[in-house]
Length: 264
Length: 254
Image (cartoon, rainbow over all chains, first blue to last red; front, top):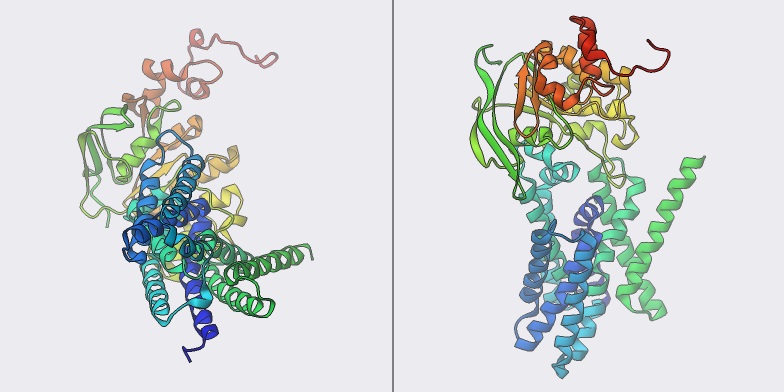
């Protein structure tokens, strides 16, 4: 069964949808969409360095993403507004990564795959990484769910209840770096943030509790992966962007459904 | 279980806090016992909120020390809590964060805070007064020995604030907890407190509301002019000294 590339692609898409759903909710609740973007862009630098040094890509990507995320957390509140800081760092990482790769002619083609993803070329080994990483991320977020939630609502409220919000944020950052690393093969660096934000945002109008929103985001992400993949298959469009487009269509539908329900 | 009236629930000695290289608080020594309501007043930026945050352990001390009863249960109502519209959460779910509580505990806390019917409501749909009461319910869930309120009536109108303080008074009576609150509603607060701490980077003056209202340090901060509502209020109730009230009244009032 795993011999069929469409089956493997579908399983990969589902894995990413599941892993990014609960995390994506926090990205939306904490207004970290740009933070996710910066973390993903740092992955390009990781890829470039790995290719230049002939080192394994996955650990390099995790390290680069983590380094970016931690740097942003450390620099926060030191002079620049958060969005300025992220704008500088995200685009610097992206540009520097592309420059670094261009110096190594053999790697140029590879970089395209990392920028836009290549879900149809997912191997059984990739699948193991995606699902292994995905389960790790879900476990991490589920384990700290309540602490993360109360820290998101208000850091002082968390502290008064004996929860360390800085520690909770660190777990979230780690999970984000992991998701970026495992999703890079599926949707590519440029669209990872979309897979975090769009399914979560699409699930918002349907949910009354945080848990329902996370589950809804997972279901919507999976539906988008399935729809996008088959659309790509029939219309011969690139798979990663097609998945993101499918998620956007669902977002528009749930948002419309909400406003119709409100006006009735 | 509540502490004996004499034993302080929380005590600070020479407490100092620095934030970003600036000394925000220095040499703050105070103790609060069970069943006592202490109010902290002071101008903007005087370190009132920082003091509360130091008490819950949210900011590190740069000097002095703090002693709490072992295993002290703290309830905290933060100064500002805005829940992002993107986060769907019911009042009931909110009460179960970070630790799950049973329906009966949640229902009891809501009833005590005066909003028994709100369990199923979305936090984002609550009015200002309802929101503050839900925060109060959350703070008293675990029957705290110490309740900290940071300008809990911000955004409430006068009757709303008065009703809120009445609730606090009832909570104190029912739970026997110590209460420390920061407030701007000077005249209401003074009436509802056992002791007042006037802070401006350090403790300017402290004592019963009457003592503080007459203290020169307090007058220097809040004046006796139109902004010194409290001073005026207290003067009218305790004794009269027209010399101090020689400021402009509104035309036609006097």
